[in-house]
Image (cartoon, rainbow, N blue to C red):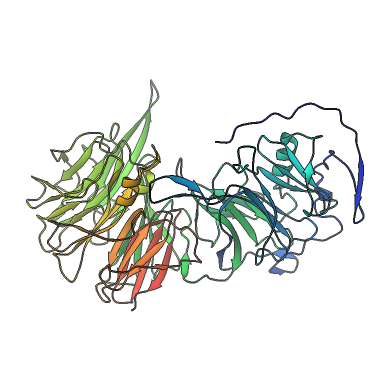
Amino acid sequence: MLRKKLIASIFVILILSVYAGCRRTEGILPQNNPQSEIPNQEVEIGNSKGGEFVPWETSHWEKIKDGSITAFAIDPKDTNIIYTAVYPEEIMDQFGLVRRTENASTIWKSEDRGKHWSILLSIKNEANAPEIIDAICIDPECSKNIWISEHGAGVLFSSDGGITWKKDLQKSENDILKMYNDSFNNKDLPVVYMYRIPEVNSDIGALFSSLDSGKTWKRTTLPPLTGIVSNLSKPLAVDKKNPNIVYAFGNNGLFKAVEGRGNYEYYPVEDSVNTSYIYIDPQNPNLLYIVSYSYQTYNSFTTFKSSDCGKTWEKMGDFYFNPLYPDLLIKGVTTKETPPILFLKKLYVSLDNGKNWKLTDLDLNESNLYNISVGVKGIIYAETYKGLFKSEDKGLHWFQIPNFKENYWSAISAHSCFNSRILVDSNNPNIIYWASGLSKSTDGGKTWQEINIQHSKYVHGSTIVIDPHNHNIVYLGVTGINDVEPLSYEEFTTQGIYKSIDSGKTWEKIGLTGYSVSAIAVSPVTGIIYAGTYHDGLFMSKDSGKTWEKIPLDGDFHISVSSLATDSKNGIVYIGVFGGGIFKIEDKN
């Protein structure tokens, strides 16, 4: 943590400075005058028809700067020129110690919208540690005048576009921060953007736009981003010459919206919080279903349907749906009852495709629902805060599977709630794997044996799949939760993907050490293993896990994968992501 430093009071003499035709009274910041934000230029609306703004039909993110971005600014006179502040990354070394890659924060400048960069300034404090740069502000009347705020250490000023710098002792950081936030107000633009974070304490969100000053909102075609939310209140900036160009920045870097599709196809789903489940219709592979689930929004399910392999979507309803069992629907309902005001969480099921609903006896008021898995003959498994529950009558009545302690999930956070943690062997429904509990049952859940993988309270199984070519081969993803406290080096290196060739009796780690594995799928056609991660995108192995390569979805930035599904008839792999929507890639060697 950086300590706050006070600026000593001194007598100040106002000095007039002139540089390149710019006149400025030192220490006096320009007022936020909407008419002066873009002086002497008309807004050139990109992709316009008849002078009206037209959003791009397709767009993707391009990462233009690595590192933890703490501040960003666009030159108000020339939007090709952009500035950013980078705080050095922290990495864990081989001894389990967290170290910074550099000992100074840096200010960078680009004159071609992020294609090329030059460093302007390195900043560190008296303890030889980097200062956090809170804000970069540019004078809208004279863009050679630049201020930066040093997070408790004062304000730096340049009157020559960043070539030279000196302390500005006349204005406080509050003035700079106010100017910084005001500079992000784009009331004169034809479009307004909102970065929507669907889950509490999440750092994953999606970009929405409004063409009517915020009355209605529509999701953009851009994929969700991970790590944009940081200590900044304004993680977005808009190019005023072309408002389709949006910059997003935060802990995982600086990103720019670019027209057209990226490396792979991405299709947003308007209201989806995250893509928790992906189902392909067994009769028609072009028919696709996704279920978005949020346990933080009162155990809310929402199902969407696509008839064209994911290109367009329609909402079916606020329930869980699986095309293998089309008559069964599951719905979480929260009721408000007074007095006193209580929010009661209840689980309902419909056995006739929504015509009638019945209340189940699964108590969710003290036990949040984390995961649903529907098996054969109407058997359903449910993970809750208190452990694993089972229903043998399509969800009407539930009983808790014994031998598991309550509050097992006390350290589990939202990003570990994925779709494939309870696995029933399709060849033998009595064989059940429970990834979260690192356990296996061979008698339908009556008794359980622990999977012998070293773990701690903050490390657990996150996803598990059986190889469709050989049911003795099982793949297990292991993840750690560092929301409660930082992972130790041993816990950190436990993360990765494990393989068993004897139905779970013994396990061997086969790769992705240190990665938080969130979803696994094995192609029944090519045999390729696909492994999704939280924060680090998608990987694949073509040699049964011996080696791994990264698949750069929409460039090479941090995407969090929440679910995977393979379409063997069309040769497609669907990748569901946190923040909602799906990517599509070809399943080929």
